[in-house]
Image (cartoon, rainbow, N blue to C red; front, side, top):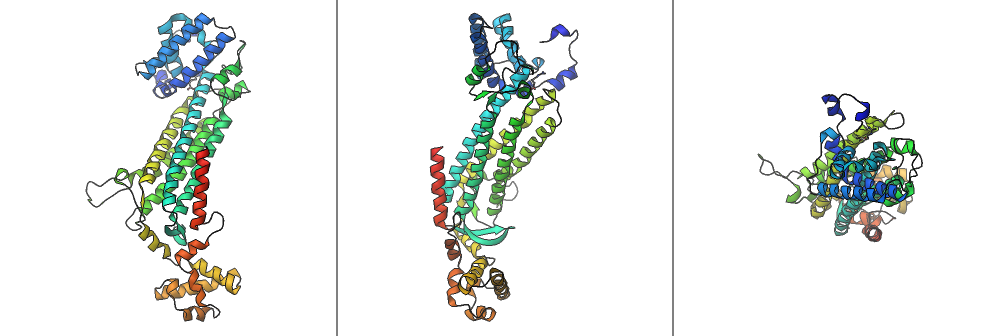
Length: 457
Ligand code: ARG
């Protein structure tokens, strides 16, 4: 492509380090879309004759067909996707193909292709997050009044419902989807026409190409257009955050499905056996979802470090954006699908959860709250009294609701039998009716809110 200036071929090692077709072939469709819009615009402003444009479009159509039919010859000697398409176009339509590169550079071309790819990746992620939310909503509804321990420090804290616990993830994945929508909105500006870095002397119509490619407007600075990759970093950050959320849910599924917890059963579809231990049901899918977060975080930091300190504008370093970018979204998409499948199939073991919900003096806060409400104790004093009661219960190996009233009264004489009404797990959960609380009526209200929100979007 630049034979005029050079007298010898690049070294084999130069080709080895330079070549990107092995991975940027994934940008073929984006590259063709950009070329089509560019050619149409050049014709509209009179830089290309309409006959030449027709030839170019015909060649591009044929290339598209070859790519779809998997007959397109991806060749390493042409380095990257842009030059592979250009070389093939020349084979198909001859020298007129060379006119397509008027008022364009690979710098704005690659900036465009990556932007189009990231925009689609954001859209796919949003759709997948919505599907996962729907799957969680169905389970939350089924389990809106299933009691389970709520944990802090993975120690029993206060009883909650399983539905409420699942709805916590509906909130997280909802914010993840919003973050992708926000990133998409911010990045939706077209860099095509920035050319190498300074813009073009040809009378190009950047508004037209922006519009044709579904962008809100052209980018406003040609140097920024070819130098920026923060749109990719932002999308990858969002992906990493979402992967972290997925890893937390995955970790809980791993814990919940142990025989020791026995809170949930995973379907055969999402577990594996052991080649030596016949009793095993391993939550491999959950473990791999948990592990994907590591990969996504690695990919994000890889690209952050590649971009750090790069002088404006384009540097070849930026070719290293693609593999971490693709790896992030491949990982995220797989993790989201696997999690959606696992959640859909998950069966809650109500009895095991209910039994665990009462363990560990989980209604101790309810006892303290009663002392505040009924006896008007300052909360700190109530906390102290409750601590003493818990200590007694622990010594006796009894639950709070099993303690004799006289024993409670030895610690705080004004306690009455009424206190037993708040010590059960059911009463504890039912009482938490504050907005966003775990009482089943609140959980149902949040499920209804999300359902109408998701069906409106
Ligand atoms: N393959 C290159 C990349 O991915 C395309 C841009 C090359 N531009 C250049 N001036 N060498 O970044």
